[in-house]
Length: 298
Length: 292
Image (tube, rainbow over all chains, first blue to last red; front, side, top):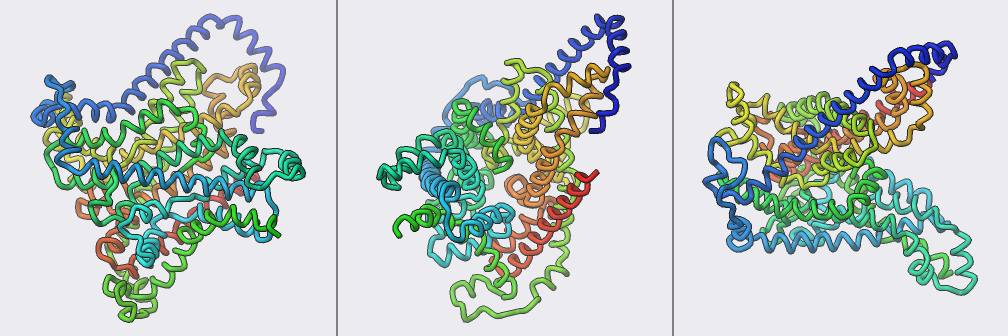
């Protein structure tokens, strides 16, 4: 808008003249700039990745190496001892199993969200608009506001100190429902109507038409659900007060408070938590980026 | 008849869960905030008393609450521009060429956004360590004095915020990149024909066209800072001397650790009001901006 008045012919003529005169040096300057940008970005990328690299390097150092000063970059006697200790001396096997269970329960939430998204996308029913508005309204509400009442509600339902209780508050998200609805709106209604005329049951329509056509959004949502379930911290922290219900994230924060001076063990524990995410990221990078592009936050 | 029930059956599980854990808690918080509910009251409801606006009045006179709000304000004022500028800058640079190399670099910037905060805080705590941390070693090798990264009140604010900035940029880079790729190439070409340099094109054409993405990123980043919790919780537990106690940490400590449910609920409603006010204000500003 602002620039429209500047698109005048004299300018382009002047540009052509300038270009003839300085075309060569301009091109060289442009290449110099490109190289500079690439170098700066590479340095930035390495700096960004550095804490994770430092974590992996630290996880195989001996305790003596890990607190050495000046710090060692690479271990001279790499050891997996601390990984082993996490699973033998400490309760990380339990935490890992709990985390996997919480993630799996999240899968049920994924199905619920897909179902609701389908209902909002392809059916007309009384109260639809008001219900959908409520779904979107939950996006505006910060977790700190619901933290204490939700604890009280779960306590009232006798679900504190259960893995279901840990998973329940974030099992479905308004945003997930919204994304499913947006995607499923693009499925042609005529196709569903034709199947209905042919006498297909609603279940069969959902299973054999809607589900296969929704694969892309399901993939995106599945990866995002996995990541958020794996990383979730606040709810396990609040809902699990007994150690046998701890997830990896809560176990890790406990480790942080208990063992002040064993960085190797801490880095090994952090690696146990981060490595699976890195593997998932390497495999499903496209889905993750797509999902975040769509969702913005979450 | 059966046909009509289908959408309700489909929507019911998700909607019921959302109502129970998304909307109903606000009503609970509103009721609880007028009571003195604590652990005793939780076990025996008859011991819960209605205290009117006492919780709100007490909050108003609680210097810790004001300090937590002030800390949160500081995090917002410095943290939002930091994340927006960093992510926009990196996105513009990444977008300057379409090569494979840039695509690989992109994932480096993105990875922190999906890593678990507790694990990450352990790593940063190690880097910040005063005795054997890498950062202090780098400082001393450069001839500077080592810094008390997490034990000096002012510096600790910066240290926890830095971790959040590190984690917060990746996601916003992705959003900016998506918006940048939506800008038609013709606009840039037109600008180039007009003799606009790279810098001029970026400032006068590209950034104005990113207005919606900028608005979106600013609002979501601001809300994230208003809810700032994980990094200070794991790195400093709100210390030293309450210097990194955000509003959320304050609520957690009173509500979950001290079981002052009434008091914390009142605080959480105030936080909700603040977040709502800030969001509405931004929408207003955005609305005006669009008229111009």
